[in-house]
Length: 54
Image (cartoon, rainbow, N blue to C red):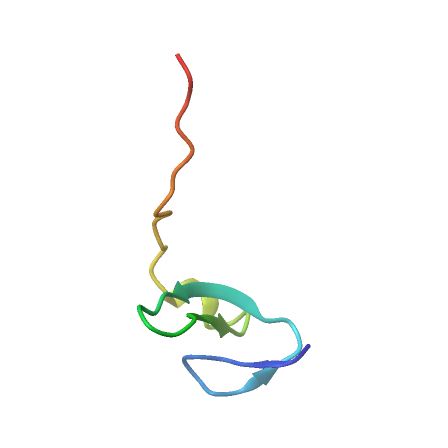
């Protein structure tokens, strides 16, 4: 499904997820970027990292 790039506002048929925003009282939203702008976004950290078992 085409999405709008969060940086350049262009419509892209190859969206890349660059962030997931969470809301306290409402559902969150997913931010998409076009393949050209995606590398310019900072890497998001995982709020629930998988812990390695010892």
